[in-house]
Length: 210
Image: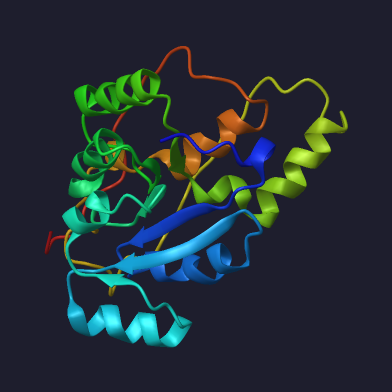
């Protein structure tokens, strides 16, 4: 199914899948003029009801397959653990749903290609939802660049630090190449460029307990 809200004014019926980080997006979707938050999905029934009650969301699923089978759902916003991003995005596209997925898109090149191919084949939209390009700091810098106040940009360097204590157990040891979008995304978005060449080198150290 393809929803052209720009021309029809029709709201996209969206289901939020994964209610850890995903719960933070619920009030955003509820306020968006072109989105109807149609329901939420979470494996934990306790978490599902807790979030559903907090935000007044009536429609709830604990099984992702049921979301994909629901013909009334136009799109899914996936906020699952990283290893599940690709498989859940692919399943949604194959089920005829538009996809918004938190980063990273996938953890392998074949999975990334599969998602792109499905989006092109079906005409369905896929959004890799890099949040940093919507941060006020980036938007401020982007506006300066658009006004020509930064001159001709020849070199950009970025870094991202984040305290992972208290996060799910797999995060601290996550391979850096699986989560580079917070740095790469804004660098490319500043002038709406695509990467032409990539080179990498290792640095830093890992904590002893990891």
